Image (tube, rainbow, N blue to C red):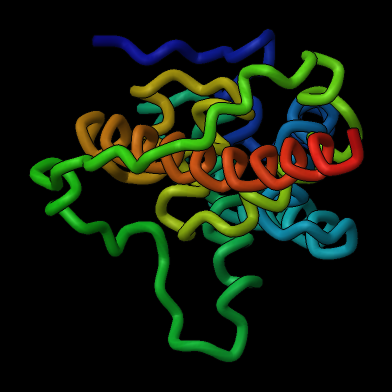
Amino acid sequence: MMVETTIQDISIEALRNGDRAEFARLVDAYSAPIYHLGLRMLGNEQDAEDVLQNTFLSALTHLPTFEGRSSVLTWLYRIAVNEALMTLRRGKPEVNIDDTDSSDENENIHPTQFVDWGALPEDELLSTEGKQALDHAIQNLPENLQTVFLLRDIQDLSIKDTADALNLTESNVKVRLLRARLMLREQLSYYYGERMKKEKSNG
C-alpha cells in the first residue's frame, strides 16, 4: 500500500530533501501538541520547552530516514515521549518505550471499590482545583500507563496511532488505557470523597 506523502499539506518529500521552509511549517503545525504532551508528562514549563526543542532537533536529524509508515505527528509523539522519559529518568539507568511488557495483554483487571462522588455539582468537578487534582493524579500514574493515557485520552490519538507511537500492540494499549482510567478514577474518588466529607462537616 502506498504511503500518503503529505500530512496536513506538509510534504514529507520536501522534508526529506531538507526544505527548511517546509520544516518551519512542520514546527508551526505541531509545536502546540508536542509542548502540551511534555508539560503533562513533566509538570514543568522549562522541561516541556526542552522536550519540544529536542523533539524537533531529533526529527530534523532523522527526517531523511523517515519512511512514512505512520503519520508525522505520531512519529513526533514517539520522539517526544522518549525525550520526556529521558528527562524523568535523568541520572537513572536509561530505559525507553521500546522496553515493553507483553504480559499486559494477559493481565487481569480487578476494579477497586470507588467512592460515590456523583452527588457533586458539575462546576465542582470542572473547577480549577478539580482540574489540578486530575493533573496531579495523571502525574502519579506509572510511566507506562501515563503515556498511553496522555496520547489516547488527552492528545486524542487513535488506539492504532497510540500503539504506533509507543511501539506497543493495540491490545497492550487497550489494557494499559483501562488500567490508567481505573487508577485515575480511584485517585479522584479519594479526592472527592474527602471533599464531600468536608462539605458535610461544614454544613
